[in-house]
Image (cartoon, rainbow, N blue to C red; front, top):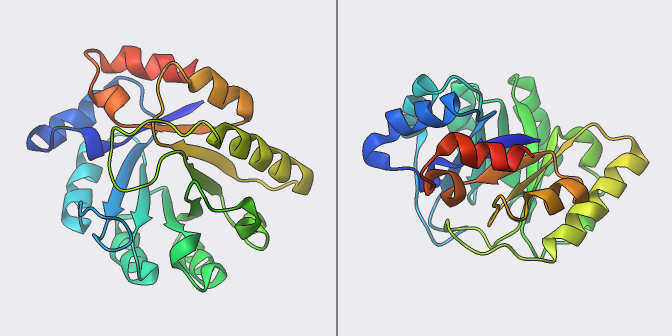
Length: 213
């Protein structure tokens, strides 16, 4: 299991130290939640903050775009060369074009589904992406409770990937804790995003260890 702490829950007054601390504690990726205040009711960070995060991080960045006009934001973050850039299928009319654009820039493309979005939305893109991020809360704010039906969705996506021989990872974001990590693992998740569970703990290494199982 890979763990990607979300800096949305970090202390932004000490962001450099927070990122270094979770990297030292065993993080595999640093998850960056970019929100535009339109696609979701919150506004977070832009390229300058993410550039600073990259300098502080010893592991790759995982940029999650919760935005309208995804191609505009993709071009803002591609120069920072994260490992992944993910965008919501709900907000993009030409996903295959954008996936190709991201890959040509040397970044792994990923797509995101909100909790109520059917897996059928992946029908024609699954074989083209390196990761699918399933939201297990309604996006926009950290600290929300995990939506239990996400477990069935993860399991169904794992079956879909295996049947098609696709090569993409399953990432889960929202309400992830050490308590539900075993269930997420059993359902077929590969990457767990955790914000408040990690940054709200007294021991980052123990929190990350609990997620890695």
